[in-house]
Structure formats: structure tokens, C-alpha cells
Length: 290
Length: 264
Ligand SMILES: Nc1ncnc2c1ncn2[C@@H]1O[C@H](COP(=O)(O)OP(=O)(O)OP(=O)(O)O)[C@@H](O)[C@H]1O
Ligand SMILES: [Mg+2]
Picture 1 (cartoon, helix red, strand yellow):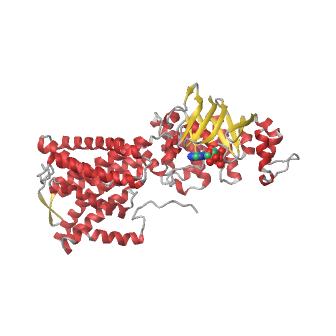
Picture 2: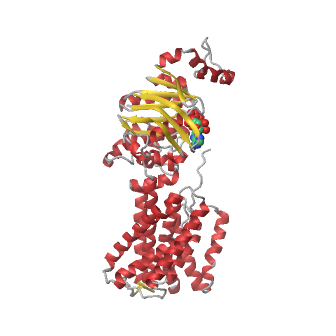
Picture 3: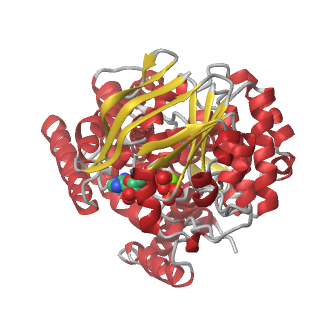
């Protein structure tokens, strides 16, 4: 029981981070049909910027988070403007190559500035053992889940309630019709990239807090693909639930079956689910009236 | 007041579609723009609303003025902010958004966001059926309800001029009548100017104050609805009536004859 609870908790922690990263991926795909292969590097950038501000410059962690998010937003706007917008209308394969190039570039920049050694992250989240339901867990995991949950709720409200959020979903549905009501598609693309970079940066900060900063963080980006394919490429709730499912699966297989298998099991499950639901669990089906 | 002065539109740098198109829409009126498939009606509306660019089209000559200001080089969002709203052909509702979210999207450019709720209610008074379905995804509405939503979305922007592209497309006759009645009411009650593109000439002439007939990228005839209705050619080719007033199938009208008459 003790082990089950601990595994569940680490699974949820990983899942929350995956959900944040996948959310950004889905957002960009929904708004602009671009598959962003640099999503993992957004996590990396977030973690290192936070490390620089708090660990190297000694800022307070709360200011660190805010400034990191702002820098991520700016990065999103710049990338969309300078790299993606000139590519509008190019074949999908070129767009994919561009985001792959972007991921190498971001990784190279990070390792040039900070080197490749693993560094200790100035953990700001308290990590004390406490007892939950009889099992001993550390508080940093609970915090991580809490922080991720808050951001996911905020984004959900943004998409359901705010007119900018509704406009973003409108663009995802029908770009030209959105344009006809005065919605600026360019602005929406830039917003998708910024929000995406920001959520990933928060994910990166959470991972770094638990595991330390190193280039490995961008490896999490690879796990974003099974998550979004599982949840449905264009579904925001799918990204969240897919992230949690994959996170839990990895934790359970790692704990009960053994390490090594935990990176394979998610793909096995993925294949099984896709056989039943080809658009993923929550993928948007084409609406056909009869 | 909207005026198109001799405009020329070219797609993909080579396909010349509008060739010296001119037309006036006075404030507060309903003006109908009629014509056969491919005449260039939708292209005309897109030239006005700034929606040509995403289709690789361009106004290459002439000018479009709205309230004395040239608008033919403006991006679509600026045109909407100046009070022109195009309801595109084929309804184009946001299928995965609810009815209410579609309406909110329609009011995107509004500065007075506080009044959105009140105007959503105003739209529901014109289209009570939308109210019953306000939480439903728009993709599951019937064709008629989607057309109502498309028009309601336009009302949310509080435009001075609404351009409707074939609102009768694919709808049952009774429903078309209902929608045309509402268009007329909107014109009278909201004092909204309307530019109505239609293939259903008979109905359009019923509610219009003035009408233009277009063929092959330019206007070939214009006038008050009564005068147009009496014109023998219009009766035959656009209203499907023969001299004795019987309905006649479009099939009977020989294509070569029609082109020759209009272009000579
Ligand atoms: N994006 C485009 N690229 C190239 N040619 C186009 C484009 N859109 C329209 N055309 C051409 O322009 C001409 C006029 O098209 P338009 O859609 O304006 O006609 P319409 O009068 O609205 O016809 P309908 O009644 O069938 O809707 C057609 O010959 C069409 O093939
Ligand atoms: Mg048309």
C-alpha cells in the first residue's frame, strides 16, 4: 500500500509536468497546424532561466517564476514572428524540419551558456517527508501537483470564458471565418506560441526542482508525443488526461515490473488504445450531421 | 455609404475575375446583388471585407470607399472595426464551439464588452431557436439554424453594413422565407445597411430597395426591384418566368443565347 501510494504520487507528479508540456504542444497544433518538435526544449529553457535567476543571481523564487514565464512568453512571440510566420503556407514537412532545427538550436544555446554538467537546482519547494494515508511522501511532489493543477484550471477557464480564449478556439475551427469577424489570426498564432512556451517553462521549473537541472530535461519532450497521441492531438483535456495516464503507467511499471520497461509500456498502451480509438481518447472527431 | 469604383480583382496574379465592377450601397438600404454561378459575387464581397488576401486575390485597380474612406488595402480586422461584417457563403459556423461561444466570437472586435450579454439576448429575440440550443456545439445545428447563427454572429459586432452571401443556400423554401423576413426586420429595426448576394432573385427583389445584376465580373444591369421585375430578360433568366408568367426551367434557357444578350 505504501509503495502503491508513493508510486501514484510520483506518477502524478510526472504526469502533471507532461500535461503542461503536452498542453502547449496541442495549443500550437490546434491554432496553427504546426507539430512543434521543440516542445521539450521549452521545458529546458524554463528550467535554466529559473536556475540563472534564482541560483546564480540570487533572486527570490517568486520573482524568478514570474520573470521566467515572461521570458518564455517573449521567446514564444519572437519564435512565431521570426521563424514560423515566414513559413506560413509551406509544406508540412518543412514546418516539421524547422521545429526540429529549432530544438537543436535551443539545446545548443543552453549548453553554450550553462555547460552540460548537471547542477543542483535551488529548490524553493519544501521537500519534507510527511504521512499521507499512512504512506510517507515528500511535500515537493504534492506542491508540484498543486502548481500544475492551478495552471491547468486557469488555462481551462481562459479557453471557456475569455473572449481571447474563445477566439483561439475559433481560429482552430475555421481560420477564414475567424478572420471575417475581425479576429487577427497572426495575433492568435503568437498567443499560442507564448502560452505554449510559458506552460512548458513552468513544467521545466517543476522538474528541475525535483531532479536538478541538466540537459536531460529536454528528453521529457520525447514523452510528449505518446501523451498527445493518446489524448488526441487537438484536445486540451486529452493532453492533461493523457499526461496523467502516461505518468502513472511509467511509475507503476518502474516500481512493480522494473526499470527499462517503464519507457516501453506507455507505447504498448498507446498502440492498444489507438486500435480502438484512432483519434486518441479525446481527439476531435469531424462533425458530420445526418 | 459604400461605393465600389471600377474595381479589378485578380487571383494568383493571373486570374482576372472582376473587370471594372462598380456599385453603390446607400446607408440604411437593402441592396441585392444577383447573378449566376461564377459571376464574381462572392469575390466582390471578399474584396470589400479584405478576405481576398488569404485566397491569394488582390484588388489591382479602382477603389472601394466606405464613408468616404478608402478601404481596399486594409486588412480584414480593420474593415470589421470600421463596421462592415461579411456573413460568408456556406454559413461557416465554428462547429466545435457552442452557439453562445460563436456569438461571443462574433462580438470580438467590440470595445464595449460589458454589453455582450445584452446583445446575445437581442440576437435570441430574432432567433428564439438559437436560445434553446445555446449550450450545444454549433456543428450539430440544422442548416437553417446554422444560417441563423451566422447572421446572429454578425449582429453581435453591431456593424453598420452586413454583407450576406447567399443566405438561402441549401435551405427549405419556408425557412428561406423566414430568414428573409428577419433580414428585413433587422434592416428596419437596427437600421443596418444590407448588401445581399443571392441566386434566389425572386425573394431578394422582394425585400431589396435596389438591385444590381452581375455577369462575368461586371454589372450588366441595375435598378429598382419593380423595374427589374418588369424587364423581359430579367424575368426570363433570373426569375424563371416566361412572358405569360409561367415558371420555366433554367435548363430551357440556352447558354449561348444568354451570354450574347448580356454582353452585347
Ligand atoms: N481563390 C480563387 N482562386 C482562383 N479563382 C477563384 C478563386 N475564387 C474564385 N475564383 C474564380 O472567380 C470566379 C468568380 O467566383 P465567385 O466565387 O466570386 O463567384 P460567385 O458569383 O460567388 O458564384 P456562386 O454563385 O457559385 O457562389 C469563378 O470563376 C471562380 O472560379
Ligand atoms: Mg459565391
